[in-house]
Image (cartoon, rainbow, N blue to C red; front, side, top):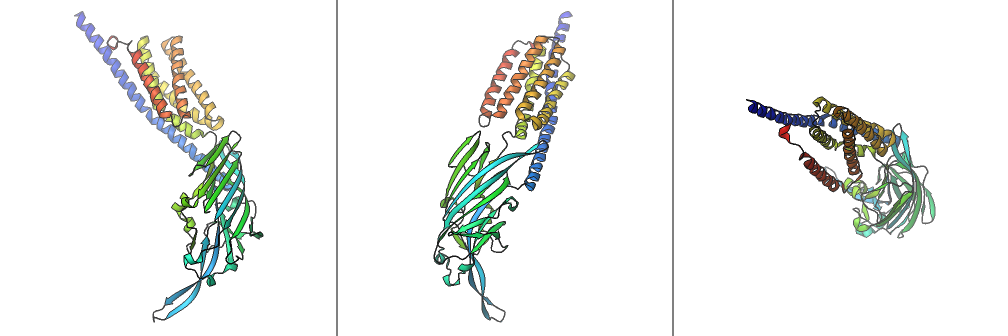
Length: 445
């Protein structure tokens, strides 16, 4: 009778281990819910930051795009109309001929700075932008325009910026060696939503050179619209963390003191014709405009919300590895840990991410990661040591958690290599767990 009873007892204990491991698996899945809440919280806080950046932009100036210049020449267009009595009448309407620069050279000197609103930061800048170039003689025959109808004395040079509130000066344009004061462009026959213009008398059959300077402030982005048949752009800045949008510079140099970047754009990469008539929306068309816009975005050296979000995405992995390590320690030490204690450890690991988020808004990501990780590791190690009544086990578990959190920190810092490094590290972790699990005889527990 004793033999069967012993067998039944061993079978029960072995089943209990499987049941407990199943309950732990369910707990890990249940912890996905608060992990998702933490990710929502990170998204919410990032939304608050974006709102604050928008508020700063409204107070300072928003993203800026340098547009133009464009030569606008009015001409008379004869329109024939037939009424209900089939009587034909002819009258003249003013149409517009638009010509883009032959060569456009832009040099921008950008001074960036960070503005704080509470725990949030926004990047703003002041810039001095020099533009110069030349216009060719309009090819009237190509567009079927009679030169006698062209109003050369009413020509305009039109240019624009995205946010006119950022203009700190009234630009003066030098055209063929003569200075002209600018004014807001008329709403009709204007290729830009926010435009300035200089009126001048264009010499018939002649091209001309131009130059002007913009004293401009803005936020985050400084973009350029490729309007020249050849467009050369040079940007110099004291901001050490640029991100180049749409087109990579032909040459760039980034140091801890700032950056320089150069673009050279040819006519073949421009989605606009060199000249056209009548259509005011050619330069405003969404897809074409996006293809012809390039520039730089000044970004924060540490985007804490992006890094915190990436860290939270590994929360399930960290909890899984921690619980597995704790469960193996429990079996190897033959010291039972109640499921409620597993739940408390899981709660501490979830609270870790709220600590990380709140500290990162004050101290930046690196310091907040160090403080939050150290506090969480110390708490869990102390709690585990008190449960197992073993200081060396607590030290070992602290070392295991340090490896886990250090591993996640490396993954967050990496970009292109994160998948490969993460996969290799996980392979090593699984191999280690397989090795130590050999010491456990599940039938004897």
